[in-house]
Image (tube, rainbow, N blue to C red):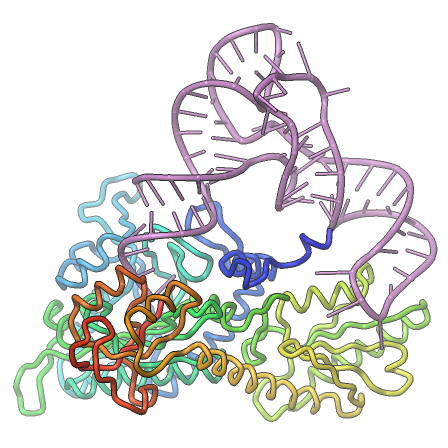
Length: 489
RNA sequence: CGGGGCGUAGCGUAGCCUGGUAUCGCGCCUGCUUUGGGAGCAGGAGGUCACCGGUUCAAAUCCGGUCGCCCCGACCA
């Protein structure tokens, strides 16, 4: 009986643990359609908070939201050679409408570059129309072979930013800027540290000049590509006649960028912070930050504790915290469950702070605050609980990021590494390995075949090792770039 | 698409080999006692045994087929 209440541990089976947490914390459920998922209110609540934060950041950097159609004429996809090659195999295609065969099949968007740049071409005539900075929140469909809740489903929710610029350098700056926005969000809100850098040509987005990525380490030491930003060069502009007149009167193709993050981030959150008790949600993304669990013994106690708990909830919800928005508080007044059972449930659901309130507390005008991340308890006065809770939530947010970064660094390897040792590491517990690379696709490919590890990114300077790499991990020839190797989702 | 596993109540399962009234736990409903780390007792509701066909007096069980899901690989955010 105790057994089916316990989660599979991360150590015993990380993949099973992940599925159980997602299902039992009610983030999502399997749907009647293969490979598709239903995002339940607790999961969607996290996504909504992610959306809100990201959307504000996009607006601050000058972008505006728009919406483009779900259906894309099949011919559009074919206009950019690499793009069609990359995405055609995984598209869903509508061939019939209203019972009739369509003249041209419609692809359900796997991503919207083609239809968006076709529209940009209509809207841009002059350099004065640039830059054009657009974002859309949408669903997309990719017919994947194998799916996993949040990490890879046939349909998923995301945002895709699409911009057009007058010069290569402006586009490059934009792609870089948005990668930075992603990083700020992932670290600041998700408490999920990332390594940023550039993808090698084999991992580059289909149709892009350069792809930049944020890579996060999950608790099984595998990498999760959490967000990408692409400098598309003029590839799509040329395919869709996205031209403008320059200041000097010449005609030129625009330079594009695109960048996106998806509901996959929710999966990343689970695998970054979850523990063997369940989910741990960083306060800034938690739909509920504080759960009040009232405790009573007698009917008299029950009445006065519940009354006090309602008042406490109201006063916490009114608390004028320094950051915008009020404390998000839930009172668990269910009377058919004992407090202990409630504790387990809210721990599973990942609410960052639990507030216990019982007769003894009331008698001394106090309550108990329990942190979900560390399990530590502290007793605080009811007169100051709003401020105490606010301070504690900020602390939890900060310390979750520190803990996640410490874990990543503890599982990262730097410096000279032999090929044999590298293989052992990848066969064993896995790691982020910073190692030299000769720059050849052959070595990259061989390493992937032999170890399943891939180059996640050629890391940006701040992540690179203090000593430059001398030799390629595989072939021993002089290294041309430091690479971050890991197995990936 | 290859390999493996599985479809029995809301969830998890036993039964299948050897055909004969559908098993248990959790959850749910009612009542009483409980409530500071997963409550107890009593009573109760809930099932086209994935689907189609066959064999048989009789099929969850045997035979044939179909569908679906999960896990592991090749593809990918």
